[in-house]
Image (cartoon, rainbow, N blue to C red; front, side, top):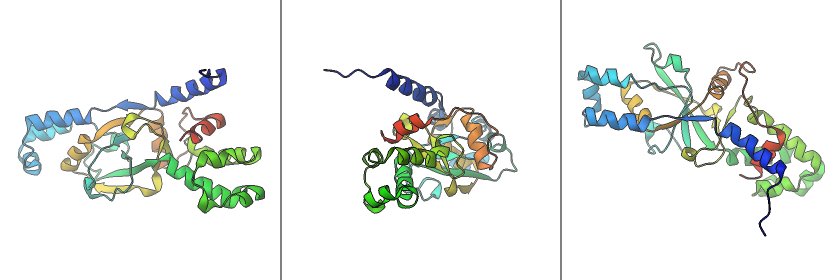
Length: 253
């Protein structure tokens, strides 16, 4: 017998999907790259860029924006150390990127939320949970978030959600939540703001970035991302996730 989904479950799923489905927009970076490759000589890109004004002009027609997400890049991409990243995201303000005086692009790594959730769960169990929970679990031996969370007392469940809630409200200074998308493995992910790196901006590197750019964060989350990067909180109104929705996400990672 097929079990019917409860009205509460349908409502929760619907409210999650409302945010998820409006979180991103598609970027045709790969398509634009292929058009460039057909029109210009890519055997020696640096030389072509130097001598061909039309190449430089057309390249500037493509707008790299804050919140653009780069995926499926090679291991040596932009000569960055990219261990265990699922993607990269552009951090500069969009209006700053084309300006000649902007010499650097700021890039941040994207990781699976499950990795961060485990770390935070272990920290909570080791330092913040009730004494009975601390006695029950050894943080070093926790290997299943859902099973561990399900065994918490009602009070510890609430306290853990409260402990991590700022991430899901897009208010955390260190981590920025990213909704699931097929280009990011259809999993919940996060931007590690503490691991921001800068690269010298030049046209050759911009071509590399365009080639692997597939999606971008939509407004108003894009503006919220920018406000967090500049440490100006609370000025951008965005939809965020309730405690019930956070519980649903964490127990279904």
